[in-house]
Amino acid sequence: AVHLLYKGTLRVLLVLLHDFPEFLCSFHFSLCDVIPPTCIQLRNLILSAFPRTMRLPDPFTKNLKVDLLPEISQPPGIMSNYAKVLEESGLMKQVETYLRTGQDSMKFFAELNDRLVLPAARVKESGTRYNTPLINSLVLHVGIKAIEQLNRDQQNGKTDNSPMRHSVQLGIFDHLASTLDAEGRYLFLNAIANQLRFPNNHTHYFSCVLLFLFSEARKEVLQEQITRVLLERLIVHRPHPWGLLITFIELIKNPRYKFWEHSFTQCAPEIDKLFDSVARSCMNPVGSENASASQLGVVNGSAAPRSS
Image (cartoon, rainbow, N blue to C red; front, side, top):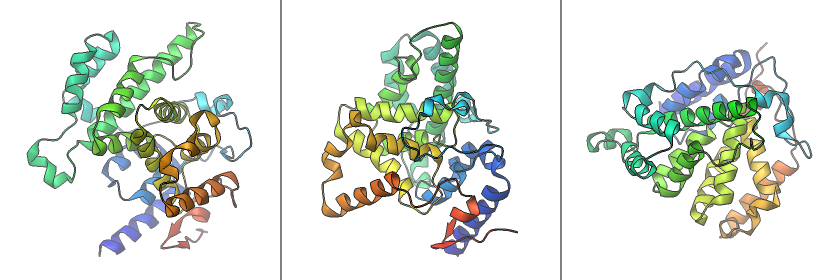
């Protein structure tokens, strides 16, 4: 029964991706909030949606300058109330105060991690210690505030307008990545990866955040977990979100990240073979990721038929 439910849900999402992609674009946050972390292909289908009026740049284009794409400066439309959980938890006021003033960082960070943990009574039913919707809400809200600040700085003529310049928003992400335990960090990194979609300023910013966290990681376990979050979304059947592809390609191709020098890429023959296979498919793709949902969608290993 569960298998049939999953297969049916997959087919419904394929139809939406093919015929109503704007719906998935607008409500990706709410949909990802209710999809279990293990249902990776379902989540990929939602995050692969892009407006029908947009023509996706080929992520495999040599020397693709993502930051120069005209779409990369535009915000995506989000119809979900992504801040609702943050407001209901009572955390919004603290977050807004810290983002506005940047003061009492030690007190704010000391309380932040504890606020993301569920009460003991809800842990069993949720299957995790952490309030996943709250983490998702926090990550998107802080990211949007960071983008708004970058836009204001650009309008005011500030020269240092790099997405990864030091900011209170980036400080929150760096704190969570370095202090959460393995379970919490995995959910946090997934919340970031959920914003790697079609070309827009959210995709660009959160891609930069992931690459920054990888390059500035003080422990290799964080780099390994970032790689896991990206890789497990790439090894399932297509389609793969555009932002996911450009982030992983940048990670393995840019020498500044020294990706292939890390021990976790060669810790076992089967892992080495897996990385080699994924790298080859990213460097030398057989087909374009721009194909329609019906062409790329897969149900139980077979291509979904194109609707007439």
